Each structure stands twice: as C-alpha cells, then as structure tokens.
Image (cartoon, rainbow, N blue to C red; front, side, top):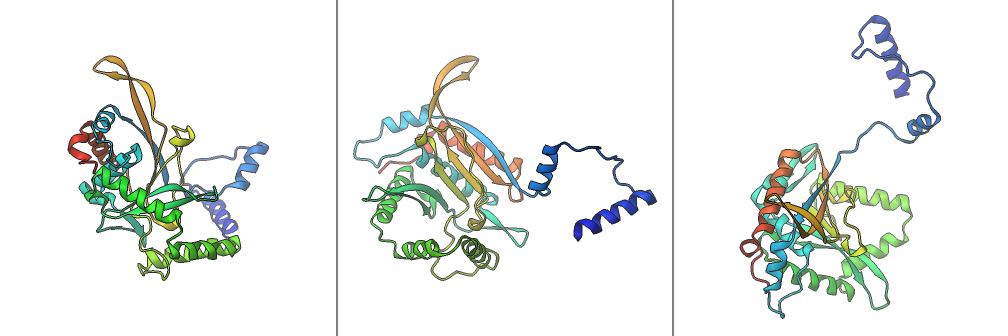
Length: 291
C-alpha cells in the first residue's frame, strides 16, 4: 500500500513538473536485477568496515622480557588493553545509541568472545565481559579472561546455564522476539532485566579468528548487545613493511572492525587508531607489568 501511494505521488509530481531528479526508466530490466530487487529492500544498514595493520615488533620484544610465571599474554589481550585506553581517553567512543541519541557509558567495559572447551569435548562460544578494562594491565586482562573461561568451563555460572537452557527449548521466532524485548528493556528503557547480566557486552566486542588461519574477516554488529564496535583479530603473519624507505619483514596482525556509523564517524575512528598505534609502539609504557 505504501509503495502504491508513493508511486502515485511520484507520477503526479512528474506530471506537474515537480521533479527532484531528472530520470527516465531503464527499460527492460535484466533477470538478475529483478531477483535482486525482490530480495533486498532499500539500504538501511549502518555498518561500516575497516582494517588496521598493527606492527607487533615492539609487542613481541616486550613479551620476550616477561617472566615465565607471568600470565600467558596473547595479541587479543594486548588489543583489549589498547581499546580500553582509547575508550578512556576519548569517552565519546564509549557509548551506544538509545532513542536515536547517543548516550555515553560511565565505565570502560568490553567483551571478549572465546571458545570454552568442556570435558566432553564440546566447544561453546562464550562472552566474557571485562569491567574497568582501562585500569587493567595486559597481564591482569589475561588472568581475568583465563579465570572466567575456566569458571564457565566448569559450568559454575548458574544464571548463564539457565538462560542457555531456556533459549535451547524455544522456537526460533520466539528467541528473536525475546532477544529484541530484552534489549529494548535493558538499553532503550535502561531497566535491569531479571536474570540477565548487567550490560553484558560493554562498548566493544572483541574476538580472535587468527586461530582458524584467517587474517581478514568481519563480524556483524550484534543488535541486542548495543555495542557499536565489533573487532576481529586476524592471524599474526610476517609481511613486507616499508620502514624509513626500506622494505623489512615484520610480524603484523590485522584488526578488522565493524562500526555502527550512526554512533561513530571517520574522525572519531582516527582517534582510536591513533591510540592503538601509540600503545603498540611503546608497550613498556602502556602494557604494564604482566603479573
């Protein structure tokens, strides 16, 4: 009905000479175009994508100096630290969209997605939220993540188990509605939803796909998380890099970002990139002690 009405208005406007754009019909439309028109509606996706290549030379040197008893640190932990510092330095990065307005969080939190391997051999993808990550060293981030994953592996999170069990028996359309309703209450209305962890994801979701041999991949935004930034860490590889007009082979890692363009623009992203580069150029200053 809406399409018919808009077309009638458009035709009348054409006849009366109130055209906004001078156009003419394409003519016979190719079959693929017809299929495409029937498959997708007008673009309404705010996602933008970008990749940042990070030089790991200084980070690897820092890692080699850590004592054997220190927590095992990976690139994911390092990037989590860098993101935490970026969110703290530029608070306008630390928020979400609510009622078509931007609201800023008062705590610097992010979520790391990781696989939890159970004794049965089954693996589940779980989310670990780190609160106040800007105040944590890389070693503390590594230890907190390891402790939380072990906690989940032993199935000691009863609230999570109950939620997972409930979702597993619901039909798909009800799961979709329940996730939407939970997000609406938790974020749009900003009311704590019973049985759901408080602000489960924070301002950013971070995960590593390098273990699967991927160095370039993008994840979709998760609507019910209200996290406007999703980051995928690729596989660290040696690549040719130009350093002071010389070509050198250095270990690099790609950080692949999906951003909600309603929340963040290029100028704001540039600030985040600046902090990440600063952190990896001087890990002794920014990573802190491992233990």
